[in-house]
Length: 286
Ligand code: GUN
Image (cartoon, rainbow, N blue to C red):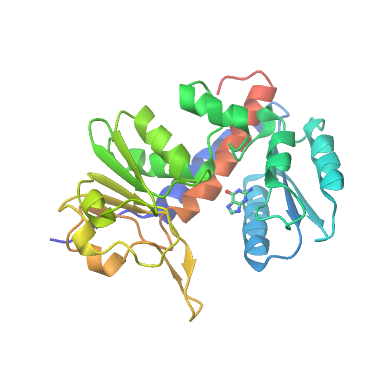
């Protein structure tokens, strides 16, 4: 038997059309969601991500601002720019693209973004609200994973979810979201002994470590759901995930590919967060 492949691109396209319809409804009320993306320096990967975000904004009829700053920009200048967009009522989401140049503290930037416009969900207040189960803007990749599961009718409730990776961007918030969805959650990381044995116990296995094709078939319980959050660039320029897709395919029940898996969901969750923030700013139900 072969696993069912979860088509993240197709699901993201469906969500795109749902968002488009909502944007048109807002347009009738004279309301337009606005997102600013701030890029400091010339990191090639970041330039691609920022271009994609701006393109998606334009496609959906958002007010889209891209601020490109030289790598030498001081932290104080960047914080001042963030402060300006905190006050700008046409902007509902602020995203400062990471990684930042070494001389700028990412934490200082995250803390400076208004919680209401924190569409990355990285601000400590957003993280705190997520942990205690209050309403919050959720980090995009983890909420993209939850949305993928929902759209293919996989409920985490009562399942054992094993998350490999404990980053603030993905592993930790995703573990909290899975917990909120009533999964029993285990977080594994580089110091976990017997990683493959832990992975084997998962009904839902999430790999978010950044090691190309680390998860092999003998890490996967037959029929398990395997979610690959890894995006690794191989020496030949091709993209691959943290899961050895071809190897796990005959064992898993469900598996996400790379590309066309979690990736396209991340950007759609950013658009959804900006829309939510916009509706909140206008006192509309979200
Ligand atoms: N760089 C890579 N992923 C992300 C992300 O989700 N948000 C931001 N701000 N920067 C990133």
